[in-house]
Length: 344
Image 1: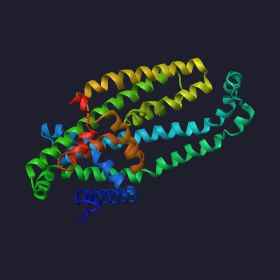
Image 2: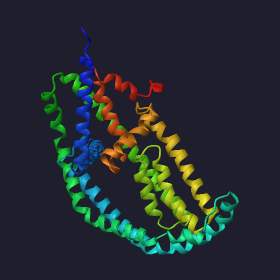
Image 3: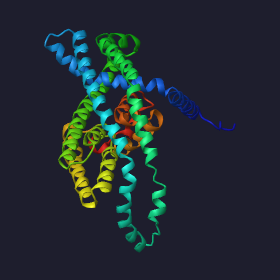
């Protein structure tokens, strides 16, 4: 009797793969709905320890939530106002970049020709269109003003999530076949994600502030914008700090020259060395339990699936997936592949 071409285990694997593809396609299509929910969930995870501390000083939970959310709204309003002013000024400055680019490009042209690279600066400048960048910044300012409604709905979702936290364990236990093991896994996931997000937010705030101060001392224009960019992109592992350094370095290179740009690069390298390579690993303890390759691949995967928010939250999302896989017999082997065995 001939052996079946597909075994039962192989059939199960094919079915699971098909289901996974369908789920990812659904998430991709519904990203506009899912992304705000995920963002609200992680904001609630960041704010919940603050709410818990306020409860310990005998402040009612609802009042503590309202107080924290009010502080967040005030900070965001001040931030949006200052950022909008800075971006408007940046939009007015952009047309100067074209004329300022000609001098450094003229200096660079002989070096490129000696290296065998034939480049015509006059032809290259024709392709530089500051109007496109100006339109991009103008649209960004408009989107910031229009985003206030979305931010309000996002914060409203966060408020209801924080109110629901005390009742959530009881509801989840009723849904589980093994409540003790399930709640232990959920608590472990919440502790890991909460610790990562709180520490990462604190480190990102300090990083953004130090970048702002450094650029202000070096008299770099739009230092606040670049500091805010450093804060935001610091959530992106591996490449975030590099991406945050590119715009201010390019600006200084165009307007101030090569040596001033080198000073800015040295400043960013020092900040990344101190905060990214020394302070952050020390504060994170033994690490996230994820290999470096998995962290980088998760950045690409979640960025493709959920867009920029997926890139910012790639590490905590991967931690959640890893802990969920550890709870199933079939997923344990995949969880091992995601782990950093050097820190076991």
